[in-house]
Structures are given as C-alpha cells and as structure tokens.
Length: 480
Ligand SMILES: [Zn+2]
Image (cartoon, rainbow, N blue to C red; front, side, top):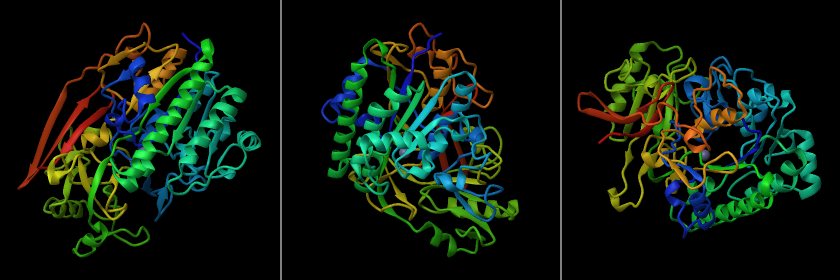
C-alpha cells in the first residue's frame, strides 16, 4: 500500500512516434527512464471526450455512455444534440456519465483529486464528473464560472489574468503548468491531479503532422514537459508519481466530403437537424447515426447505401458477438460500445495507410466537420489509436517497458490499486501491475490480437482487436 500522489499530464493528440530525441528531447529522455506502456491505445471512437471519460471513470463507452464529443440528446436533451464539453449545459445532469467517476471513489477513500484544463468549459466535468458536489477542485481556462471558486481565485491572485480559450494559443498550456506547479500542487496538495494540455492537438488539426505550426507546438509541449520534469525532480524524496499520457493519435486529412449533403440527396429519412423527424446523423469523420423514431428496416437501407459509397470505412451496429445485426457490419459490443445511448450506427470515413497518395502518414477525408487539410482523429486507424503512456516516480519501475495491452482506461484502476482502494463495478480498466514496483501484469495483459472480417456483397471490412476480460481494445480497422 502506498500513499504517493499522482500528477498526470495529458498531451492531447500526441502520437507516440513523434516523441523522438530530436523532436521532443525532454519527453524522450523521460521515457528512457520511465515505465512505458508500449502498446498503449486509445478507445474508439478516438475522440477527445470519449477518452477523457475513459480516464475519468476508468471505463469504456458501454459503461460511461459518452460516444462522441457531442451526443444525441435522448432523455438528457430531447430533440437536441448535447455538447458534452459545455459546462453550463451538463453540470447538473446526474447521468451524463453512467460510470462512477474516479474522483468519487477517491473521495470515499479519503483521497482528493483536482483537474486543470486548457480547453472546453465542461471538460473538467468529464475528468471528474460533478466534482463541485464533493468540494474537489477544478480549473478551466475557459473561465471562472467553469472552475471551482477557491482554486480560480488563488490562481488569478498568483498568476494574473488567464489566456483566452479559443484557437491555437501556446500560452494556455504554459499557464496551466504554472497553475499546477506554483499554485495547485504546493497550496492544495491533491492526491491525484490531472492537467490536460490542449496542445499539440489544436495545432495538429490545423497544420497536419509535419507542418511548421505543429512543429512549434511539439517543441512547446516538450519544453513544458521539461519544465514539469524539472519541477518534479526539485521535489526530491516527496516527488509524486508523474505520468505523461495522450488521449489519441492523429491521421492526416486529405480532403473533405459534405456528408450531411450527400445524405440529403438520397431518399433516406436522415437529417442532421435534431428538431426534424428522421434518423439523426452526427456528421463527423467518425460519427454516428441514431434511428430515433424510425424502425429497423430503415437501418438496413442506410447501411446498404453507405456500404456502396467509396468513402465508407468501418461500420458497426448492435448485434451479436462479432457481426452486427445488419450484414457487413461489426457488432458495437465487439468494441465495448453498446449502451442505451449508443447510436444505431457507428461509422468512420475510410482511412488510407501511409504510402498511399505519397503521404507520410495514414490519412482520411473529413465529413465537413473539420478543415480539409491538417489532421484529424476519431476513427480506427492504428495511427489514431496509438497513444503515449510514460510513468515514473516512487510507485513505478524504472526504465521498464511493458508489452501489456492497455491504455488510458487502465489509469484509474492502477491508481486505486496503489492506495488499496477497491474499484467500482463500472470500472473495467485494470491495474497495470507490470508498470509498478513489485507488481504483476494483469492476467489478460497478453490477450491475442484477433482479426475479423465481415462482408455484404462487395463491401468488406476488417478489424483487429484485443478482447480482454472486461473490455476490448481496438488495434486497427480498415476497408480495402
Ligand atoms: Zn484529444
């Protein structure tokens, strides 16, 4: 049993292959000394708020119920689309996440948790849902009204005005690190702290993986990491455990289609307007479609039409163990997605591998939701699924590489295991004991990689997945 603190730094969207000694020397040096989960993977859909909820609850979408950054409102917001990153819209919703938050489990065990976040106003609420009710601290750089008053006041008194929340602004993550090292940690001493940097994700989106804006963001993030590591070393024998994680990778964007318009040109009863009748389309590059009042026969018509389009990538519907109810679709339960709030179809626009069209990285079209250049994420390409997971400090092995299957979803269970606090039933992540001193790998650490193929006519799709005891971890999905 240990009582060591945890400081978790999430570098949004950082691909692990970008952490090289030349590009990111501070992080690369930290990795060399750390316990590394080499096969760390995001949860599909590889959207930020899905994975944020994975960190905040130690669970998958079939448990926490967050499938996209915006979800069809259902009972939470009838005839609407709920922006789960909007604090004012979500702070009082008891069932926003349907899995027990880590912060609640920690509080019951006498431990504190705090969050500092650079981006959306409601993001801290996904990392520690309804923290305000437990008196736990959270700071959103989006504004004082989205933060716990005491922490906000202390940060403002010490560091002055905060940078605004919109656009690419490297000073935001710099400010967040100062708020951690100069105010939150020394004054509040939380047992578990999560600091979420919106970079390099924001820059990668606008600029692609090798562009100059992204290069500057990667340098910036590495400098900040160096600052955190130096601060951590300065704490000496009181230093907490320090984790660097990312929530997903990126693939480049090689064009755009107007997905909503393409559906509108068919006779299918599909709309992107939640106030109109018909099946509701969330037109993301990796999005969903909710039948709502439409009967199941419509579902097959929609799937058949999508399967005939050359942009169509992986498709999942509710169904059996491997195949969904509609031929040529995978079952949403195969990727731990089944939930009363799940859409009736999960889709992604087709992903192309590095090398096609002379591109250095995997790439995809977007669906009109993001810029036609730059890069994106949300889908099942391996380059979107691979994530950073480096951990060091008193509880972690030094210079150790674990080949266990796992990722951000396992962090909560790992922390609880060090404190001897048992995990709630909804927490499907498991302690990554192989990273811990004296620990052992989970029994399903080396689950085999299985590849499945389903077909309908000429449409054929593939999925490689690790099936663990309590969840699945996607490795790669593709349509040739
Ligand atoms: Zn992200």
